[in-house]
Length: 437
Image (cartoon, rainbow, N blue to C red; front, side, top):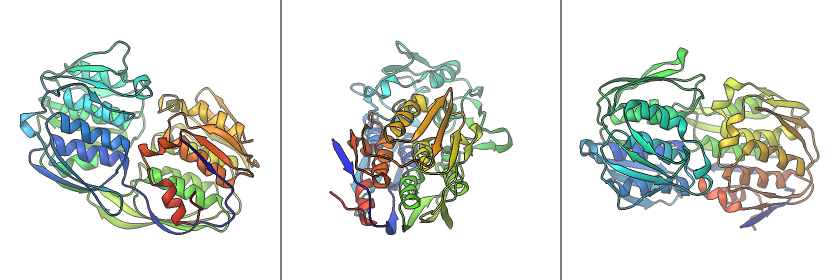
């Protein structure tokens, strides 16, 4: 599917709520499936990625009832397998394009004596899984994979606790190890080189499992064996989805937008701080805590002048998904913006680092990559272009935004990739004043 956006001649104005957080939606469904009893989940993101998780847990023994709501989210009732454990599926579990589904399932299944094969689409099947397989193997699980990528067959078994130091800050790796640790007798601990998203540490206690934390050392741990208990969870709006609306309001003259009901978890909002350092007019207003996450709104107004910023490697884990849209903002800012330690972008849904550089250059911006550093020099007068999303939802939305602030229209090939995380992206922009064609 192709989609073309044209320069927007009117400001964006109004209030909008973005869909439920993707990371939290995955975890809520997975933890509910592991739990004893029936959990009631609301605000679950209705997207292809989360749909893969819902289908997977249903195929291995969870009783799942899904009800669409008037706001576009899902109410999901999940009867978990609890201490009985998951059941063997009739065939492979298709994780689609979802790395979260695959990596977290590897951790969940590792401690049960069943055999399950995980598959995925072409993109997911090229993404690295050894970073999860290695620690889980050291705990006692066995995996069969030709090259450390999907398809992977899990041969679960009795597990031993470990103390593991990760080479990269990854919430998915950390979570997979912690979930496996719930089946091991003793303490399983994970230490990261930098702080990654902490949704797992916040959400597991809501399901009755304490999580120890030493934030100074970027470490956390669980004591097993432990069985989750059912819970009621409401998922707030996704700050990563809000980043695209925020960037649009910052870049389009006269815009004044409020994004409501989003998670203001500090491990997810570093992009706001970066945009503010670049001169963006953004006010975050906390509204309290919904369940386990701080929640609030963002009031965003157009910035008349933007300046370059440097993002250091230790900040990247908290904004890695927002780098494409931050790079677009940087292309319109004065000076050279540096994004250091962004090598992880090469193993996302696409080689995002190369794609960002190539896309910005085709738009007439000045960008380059030096090893694991992204450089963007601005300000640039963006021109029209035809760009391929490469099946990457965040690139699809980024290039669509570029068309709103360029001199000529931008056509995005493979625009349907937005269904992975933000299916109503165009509808939300239209509600703020963008013509919807």
